[in-house]
Length: 162
Image (cartoon, rainbow, N blue to C red; front, side, top):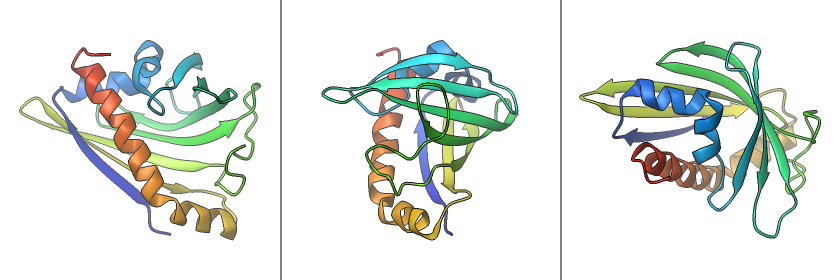
């Protein structure tokens, strides 16, 4: 299956962008959909560690999610599996999209030139049923828009505006 790839540049050194992905206080300031508040329940940025969070948005019940880190190579690479969870951290079907894959592996690569960091995130379902893979492919434009909005928040945060 073809991975979803999104690339964005940020006017910040890659060490700073890397830290924004691996430090709880920073992730809480920019991760997730626009208009949602993120509460970091715990973050253990090491292989096998987790970022466990709750998202709350207007007119919606809280949603929980987590990253399970597979690889961290500061400041250039982060590999993690992203999932929707219940309040205890158990992986569940997405309550708003039951055919969405339960696990998405993502690789974040950071390169820097002259103080500008290029972030590339490439990801796709793992351990997914055929229906989950089909749903992922059909929702690619929505996922790309979601990352664009989330990366707008990251850019604002890095610029000191969030």
